[in-house]
Image 1 (cartoon, rainbow, N blue to C red):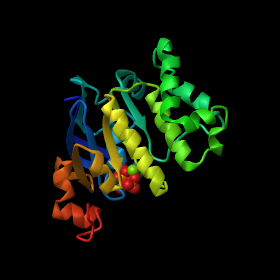
Image 2 (image 1 turned 90 degrees about the vertical axis):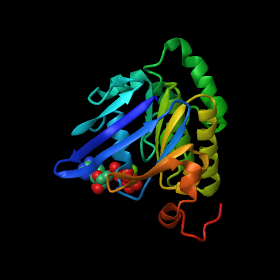
Image 3 (image 1 turned 120 degrees about the vertical axis):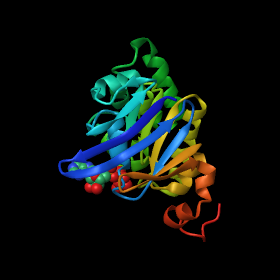
Image 4 (image 1 turned 45 degrees about the horizontal axis):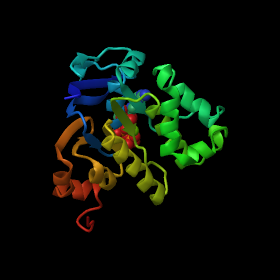
Length: 239
Ligand SMILES: Nc1ncnc2c1ncn2[C@@H]1O[C@H](COP(=O)(O)OP(=O)(O)OP(=O)(O)O)[C@@H](O)[C@H]1O
Ligand SMILES: [Mg+2]
């Protein structure tokens, strides 16, 4: 097991967002966390990467307790996080954004990592010196993903990578996520596009108002009546 989240409670002031979330990610898996707006998906990812302090519970990464470790230590241990809303640095070029992602990785690997990102995302290579703010939404999402890849994380946390993208780009982003996984990156994927997420994930957790209400192999959850009803557009939805 690479990641273990146990009985996690997170609150914002008086508002408790997570009421005892437990989940596990095994090495080599894509695990997806699905749920409606406000269910606590982003809060869970932010707690794992040290951006939200849990009130109680435990988070272990490769056996080490990281529950209260600072965010920069967690990144250095090998957890990459692509936050919601593709936060790129708008006034920097594509290349400068990628360089920032690599500040912590070994300098010796920098050029190789950059070459790999450009190979995966030829559009970024073509726009290497273009300001990030002038990229399309989909290109910005690729840049955010590429920046995380520069760190060569063991575990990649992805928060709604498909949000706001046209169907063809959604397909492309999911293919890239699956490909990263095939090449050895373990992935915890937060998505509202449950159909897509369940189609590439090995296992899934369903979060409702701060609690895990269902979990299991992705293939099983895809045919689970409650999941079909709430997240896959009801019985009319076919595979
Ligand atoms: N900074 C904050 N201050 C106060 N409450 C917050 C804050 N961030 C999140 N919350 C609350 O915590 C709950 C969980 O939010 P979270 O962002 O984790 O949901 P989510 O599942 O990622 O939703 P979405 O699908 O809309 O991104 C919500 O009720 C939200 O209003
Ligand atoms: Mg969110």
